[in-house]
Length: 71
Image 1 (tube, helix red, strand yellow):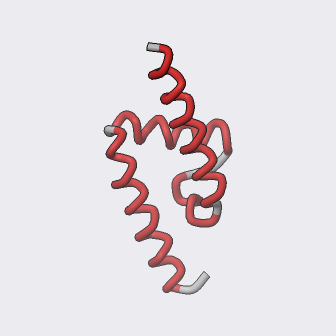
Image 2 (tube, helix red, strand yellow):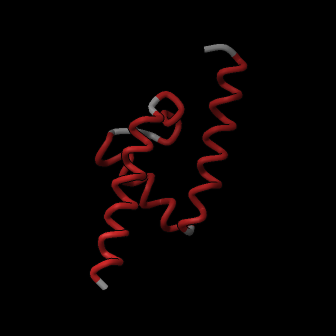
């Protein structure tokens, strides 16, 4: 991996990390928990596995949307 790729990956991880704060600090931790425990994906591996990351986010948001509809 080149230095440029490493820099890009670090910036991407930081952007994702900050973007997930829209869900709150605990919401962000839930996403990382699901990524690690259900998908075997560590935070630092997200740039190499964006499809898996997006799939996880979609599933979490779909679950939340379903629970909101029931209320």
